[in-house]
Amino acid sequence: MTERTFSIIKPDATRRNLTGKVNAVIEDAGLRIVAQRRIQMTDAQAKKFYEVHAERPFYGELVDFMTSAPVVVQVLEGDNAVAKYREVMGATNPAQAADGTIRKLYAESVGENSVHGSDSLENAKLEIAQFFTDADIVG
Ligand code: GDP
Image (cartoon, rainbow, N blue to C red; front, side, top):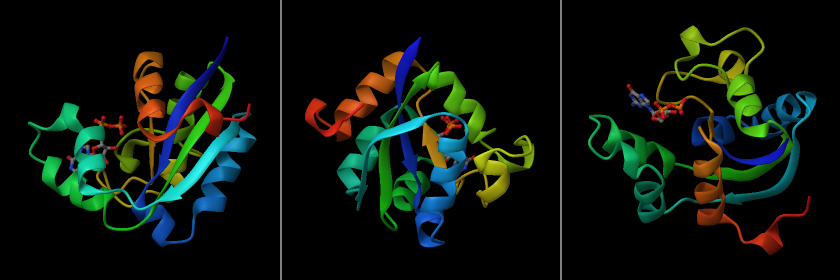
């Protein structure tokens, strides 16, 4: 089934000029980038985006990291896009990520791990709506 998922190229990756390299992995996996914008995330946006992690010990560090440099927010479209992108990203901790995944190739640590991808179709819809309107998405 064709789905849309939400992706963020995180500050550790934009800082190292890896946007194009990450996008190449995404496109080579058969996912289509149907919306994309480079933004400086505000503190309020980052807090809201990661509010499910508000009680975790790393929440403050995560919010600081996500606002430390520009990010690229994206909508990806393709067959089974949510699960497929999770596979392409690799495990949260790059030390455990499979060969060829974005995190294995580029992530620096469990926190600074280059990309975000929605973990369910329901969350994908909510996350897309936080950063894009329907008019921004050209499939
Ligand atoms: P994901 O779905 O693979 O991104 O992983 P999670 O939902 O578990 O965590 C969300 C994000 O929080 C991760 O991608 C990391 O950027 C960050 N994170 C997770 N665990 C840690 C941690 O132990 N330390 C720090 N600093 N950040 C973490």
